[in-house]
Length: 464
Image 1 (spheres, rainbow, N blue to C red):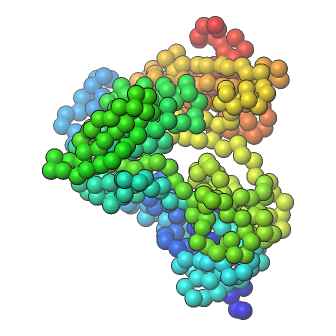
Image 2 (cartoon, rainbow, N blue to C red):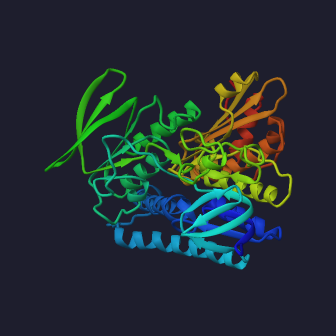
């Protein structure tokens, strides 16, 4: 067979292209296979275009509130067509950059859907390729919701919701109070829609620290977004005046109907582990479509690796990237191990971010939990930004002083959480964090203050 490679990577999303490039850096002959578009969901219809819209919406909101600082701008308008063009320009630049990176690292790229023939062979568009090691990085796709079938016009998923220039609604219903639902809720609200978010569970961001998730919900409510937890969508009927959606309050078992112009189904994502022929060659794929791996990202079949959304939650691009590097190094003969200190971020304004354990998780793990907090209302830097609604919260072990987790709501939380991820990676104590000198005035000082508060030594807040 002429098409023989050291490493084959199926999928070129964040995990896939990281794996392919690292394998090439290690001197391996690499083939990357892509069924849709280079860059995967994240760059094309996920992280990147969503953040572009969020930034534009935040800039618009800043203009509207400029008068509070003595900066008056009248008649600010939204050109959704131009906004869409700007969004697409960013995507094109980044995906083009990834294509150039693959080419620059002498990685062959094959377009088409890959299917396993045996543990070392895949078939793509009728052509067979052999790899000494194969890395599956096929990602995920939006979940479906019975009764709310996506048509990308009246009922959209996260991909359809990006098209703000197409039939922008006056009234939007977001089904799902996770990151996707909340981020799009804020974009559409700031661009002029009335927005309602419903969440089946008892809080938005169901797996998050309840205190910080509750604070974010409160702030979004003040911004005019209606949030209803323990609520589910029952059915939808299209009528002349809009989409009539029947909602059920799970607390009272009562139903009511609201009328909207568009529905976003944001009920999570499902892995793309099935349909690749993995089961036929002995690779375990669970009933949900996840491909279990060990800490080296290897499946139960030696030589076949899996990374990213297709392996396990959380479904995050940066998790996939690190898993991709780990898998590539092992596929090249190394001995790398994946460390799951993975920060999680919701890019609303204010942002929510977390890494490590919640109070409940730490208690269940047997730690004697101690908590330190710093409200942004006491932050000089937050005051200068006009963004004092927020909280930095640290979780520590009272017996060893080991830092166990961090949870934040506030501006730049997505950047601030990196310090906490590093601290957890290095096994830092809360004292280490508190002893670290932070520049003044900065938002990062709040991390130091929260650490000091955990030890009841905070300067700028009461130590109760």
